[in-house]
Image: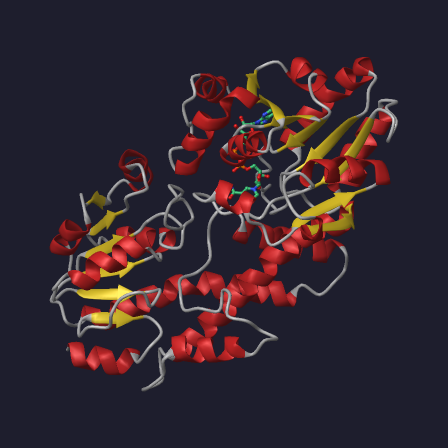
Length: 438
Ligand SMILES: NC(=O)c1ccc[n+]([C@@H]2O[C@H](COP(=O)([O-])OP(=O)(O)OC[C@H]3O[C@@H](n4cnc5c(N)ncnc54)[C@H](O)[C@@H]3O)[C@@H](O)[C@H]2O)c1
């Protein structure tokens, strides 16, 4: 079977070369000419996905990059649709870009007169595949199972690690509305994964599963942050030890039960709000997810409280260092990251704020925050500031700081550093440690 990938963005480009690595002939299509140009020149458009460069070099002979949708569809039996679904003002995912594609697809399918599977991979609101996309194609006199099929097949990936995540999923989620569409998609994936990895659901069940998984994971993160907050007031309390113990219970498990920052990034917060909206519309109590979001929003005030605790050591506002301004290691996304609101607060209160992040574009960070200063490496960040907050987990950061002999106060939000006199771990003995520092 020949496949096409519609939308060659951060996920779509990786998916194209990943499918090509399993011997599929892949037709990639995008409306962005820069991406088309870059891939045609065998250049990785997303430096942040280092694995993609190797895949482009190795498998480009199986990939044809096109800017013509008709050719793309006529050359393929199935299209993986991975275009953006930005959040609307109310937090629902917008179907705007998928609909743009579906509307162009309908007349092509009409003249193609051959079965084509539309495999939606973008994250959508529950009900979209059946009630919107399929309905639209039916109104154009296209027949399910004859002209088209529709499946919902999102992937669970993290930016910076997309190909690796595609290679090793816990399971492959496939929502379908007919046997034919399921069998067609299964044919593709049976070449890649053992059949036992495939989970077959209907369209609505799969759409709910995608956002419910992220809502469950974030519930665990907010729960961990509540446990870690106990250390803010208790004299002797190690949240890591407590969370590790809770996770030993097999009913709970250790994954995502760790001390850390608020959750952020392109999926977790948006999936949560979308799930809340869906529950609201279905007249189902959404209090549990609402609390997850509320606890998450409270985390910035925790960082501010910690800073205020230290403030009396200094005569004036301490200079604050942000080590890691993007939402995670290996990512250049910094808008709405876990440190973003904290940085905005500090700048509004006229603090001097410096940051270092090896993954972010310093011009973009400067344009966004304006008054923030960039340190050229970890050493200079520490030299330039009085108190440093380490905002994401990263082995290179912990290795470097553990080797350093600095007297500066370091707030270790993820419990990743060796505990030294001046290292202040967010979830352990806060007050006691503060006294020692004084
Ligand atoms: N980024 C993530 O971590 C992540 C994780 C899981 C799921 N998702 C979901 O995957 C989807 C895509 O995410 P992304 O990060 O790859 O987005 P992206 O913005 O990086 O890429 C989307 C691409 O689609 C192209 N496009 C837009 N409209 C098009 C059209 N009509 N026809 C062809 N191409 C079109 C854009 O030009 C862009 O290159 C979204 O629904 C997102 O929620 C993203």
